Structures are given as structure tokens and as C-alpha cells.
Length: 98
Image 1 (cartoon, rainbow, N blue to C red):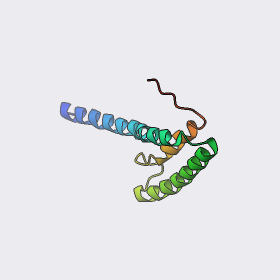
Image 2: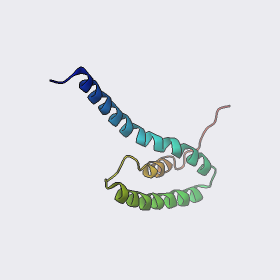
Image 3: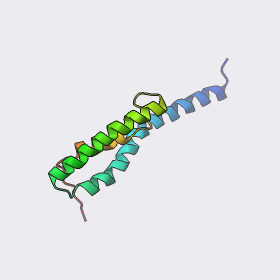
Image 4: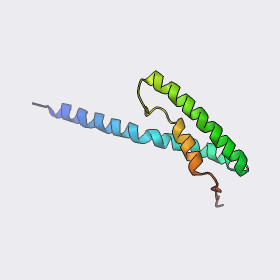
């Protein structure tokens, strides 16, 4: 029979696993917002070139990291989230309310 402690440990482990997988993409977005704010004043052609350069860098770094982690699309790799956020925000002007 399972003890109450074992059941509780199993629930906590599943919760941590879910939390870790949920937070990886969110962590990438949190890092991407300041990068977007740095890129946003650029003209759209320069922003486009910067986003393209970051995308190629993300592809290379992700491929190398996958070899190290021995896992396809490991949750620790968030540079692709950053590049995706920059593409999502392309041609969007940030609005600041004072």
C-alpha cells in the first residue's frame, strides 16, 4: 500500500515538473522584454536585421545546447523564446503611460 507521505511526494514532484515546464517559456519572455525595449527605437530595417541575426544565433546555440542536454527542445533552452518574441513584436511600437 502507498503511504500518505509517498502520495504527497508524488503530487509535489508532478507539481514541480509542471511548474518547471510552464516557467521555462515565461522566463524566456521575461528576458526578451528588455531586449525588445532596447531594439524598439531602431528603424524597422535595422530591427529586422537584428532580429534575423539573433534568430540565426538562437538556432546555432540551441543546436549546440541540445547536444549537451541530449534532449530535443530541452526546457532549459530559452533563446528561441527570445527570438520568437522579437519576431512577434516586429513593427509594434511600445506605449508608455506616464
